[in-house]
Length: 301
Picture 1 (cartoon, rainbow, N blue to C red):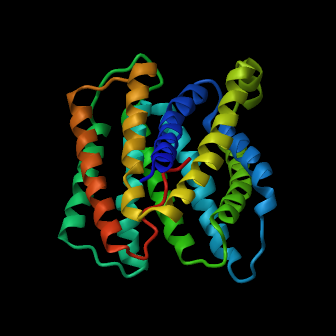
Picture 2: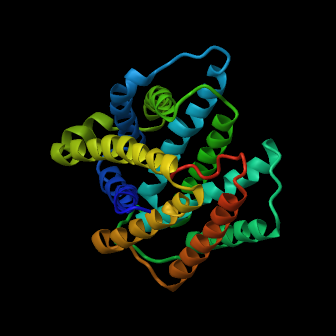
């Protein structure tokens, strides 16, 4: 990589990794699905020039939008509210094993025993984290449920990635535009049904914190992060870009422990290392084989 590419790579990983700290901070102040809906609304406004209608492809885009713009964020943000940000960041890595499994079912991929072993190690690692039992200063922490919700978000993202892989005719920015529109509508409905006290929470929250988090999530994590990722993919081999998800998680864990005081005992450390090792092995094997699976999708921004 050139120096500029290295800088872009590190910046992207930092933006996505630090995003977990931002999410954890703001969902402690306002309902998570309400925040996700507002965030996606801003992305939809900014990305609206990229909206394009393509006949015959919209059902797949709608399904992909539900997976990648609605359910994954509703589950992930709710999970981050309940689990330490560091645990959530590690659990979200399961989108790679899930996508590999779905690729076998829907896209005819044939994983060898090495990728199967990597998938198994990753799942065992997340299971260790979910049952770690580390205590937290936050009384709302329920690590098992939170990690489970984030794992479900990872599955939703993987399902969306496989769905989108079967569509055609859309650029990445057109997909992001549609997913943000679908996400805004879907998350608005979900927060109205499943959450209460949105208006009161908004009135009480520090507006600089709220809008700063919204801008960071929408502009930095979603638009700048994705733009950088696609720019790197155009210039570098997939095998070089793929490990960005691992560095993103390491950065997320580091800042979560440093700034949020996340508990990180031996069981959490072992589970995290197992998950990263398993996911890393799957990523590298996927990149080597260059399968038509879409499993090298970027971490959710």
